[in-house]
Length: 342
Image 1: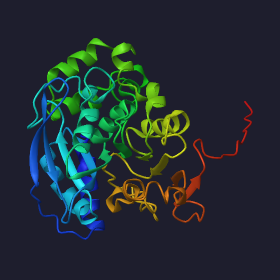
Image 2: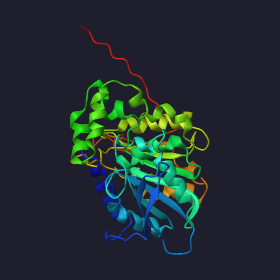
Image 3: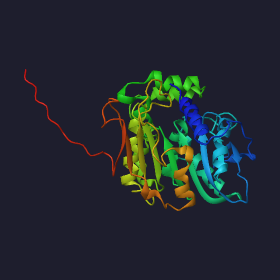
Image 4: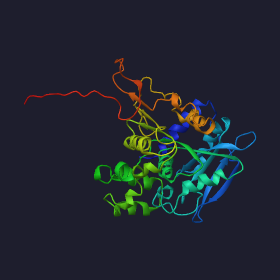
């Protein structure tokens, strides 16, 4: 399993939906942004044409910020500055990358918080920052959200876990070697993360620091959570929505959205269903979620159903392969009892 597959898939969707020739764009500037402990993170800034300041979309990635140049074209065309940043210890950034994702959490080091607040202080930013990312960059957002940066306005989180232990490393209590270990090795993360994973086979404080469900009450901005029925982190997507929608604070509580599609983790293979496309304002490629919160102060959010889910089934069944909506999760259902004779 490679989280970067989903990055490739979503970039392809982006280029199609925006009708843009996928040519690379050069960043307006590149900065080494200092974190609270002095470590500097490599950060590319893509500014749109026109007079600043601009609302900003931030993407934090472990897969090389250079690969996000295409995203800047669509963002810039809609008047957003795009900021792309390498994780701590990855590619052009300084520091160590282990334990992976922990530096974005609510501990002593808070790279997401520090980056958002650095952006807000720049003359080209109007003080409004949203974050975007799927898979690894989505997990970074989940970890950052409980730190509640004052200038963070909204998030778009795709196919990301909410608890590293329960949904990735030790799902079901057994070490997921084919998932967690292969990902760490294939993407050349510091071996220390894998070592620490195996030293903590049980759900302890090490893993609680990577369970965002426990601190959902600290999150204060609205998020759109997008997942897939075949995605490896579908439980995490749903749990993130449920915990923040009900337990969040500020604008987070009651303003989150959930979209569940008939997709896998960026690789659909033969999984093709009729009417499978994204619902209106649910696909990040059109940036509609950011338009609502970064430009219109939330106006229009009420027009998006709280929960949208794709019902799969026989292509000949008129009640299947359709999008449905609900006011909350768990969705309305009817219980049927079956009685079996021996």
